[in-house]
Length: 456
Image 1 (cartoon, rainbow, N blue to C red):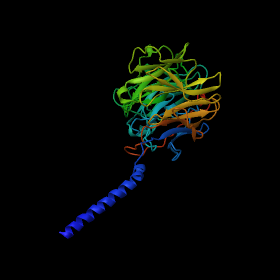
Image 2: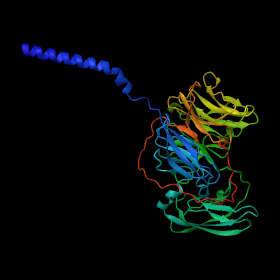
Image 3: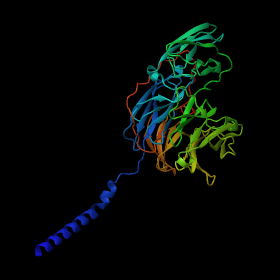
Image 4: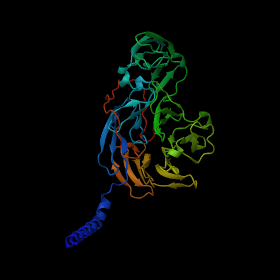
């Protein structure tokens, strides 16, 4: 009996000592628990018009590394970035395949390790053509009487071809990827940022055969950059990517896994937009997945609207500004939005927060001689990463600031277009992909160079 009592007492004492040790160690254990996911910031570093590097960096400035380098077409266009909600892909716009697409720039997606590059608009991208059956397409071209040189391209062809002013051509495009039965692949003519598309020149490519796309002419007036897809934004369920087609033109969307040759569909009814839109942003909250913010510029200024996908009526604007705005983002909880607005009287731009419930607009940054451009939110919505530059044509750096305007600090030099993921990046599926390449567009083509903060 005494032995049993001694054993029990020993066990009690050991348990007490173990509990005491646990209680003493508890503060240390609590501190060792994993913190909330702070996400990862993606950004673009432009290398003097020769290439654009997409980087990832941690919010504390560590782990800065490039995941993808994109050749520059000569337009010095800096891509905009947008994380997929589950952080498995990063959408971006780029014109590095401008000479081999119906659009001057397209929407792409890439995994966070730089693999799996794919073109969402006018897909697939050129690197994937090798896996498709091939056919031959002929097209008769009458080049304009002046200007040029001009390029002619058939969707799915490995290269575009040059035609000179005043010439008549019978062009043959060999090894054209066949996107499938009864799927029309179109012909496009281009000169710098101008493009000519003709609905009558769609052709059903036939594997192993030669088909004619008919006669193509550079007819009608082509608006510069009217066929540029830019500023991607993911739907909160990851099913679609919104974008703007043209500079201040059409809000559109494309499926996250689109069929070959997809151009995109209207995001809202363009007849409902009173002016010229340039920005569109999907709501980040699942319960508001079909809602978007968009802007519209007219003689009254630039107005912000809240709309529903497919809407025929935008209603009254939430707020109107006297100048063209630089960037627009929902607050992560969907309670409002933030906007970067320039004031050219004071030669500056600043961040302003708009609250849906009160309709109040609150200024966050207080710059009087510097410019805030593109920006993005941390997952908890309490920190902002933003472009900061001395002038509208100066290189931008990335800075962090608390949402209440406090604790501003530098994150990265020579950095632009920040996008903050809602969670740590996730790499899913195969991780090999061809490195992007490009056939340089002839240097005689007058590509327009855009200022770092001016590109919408």
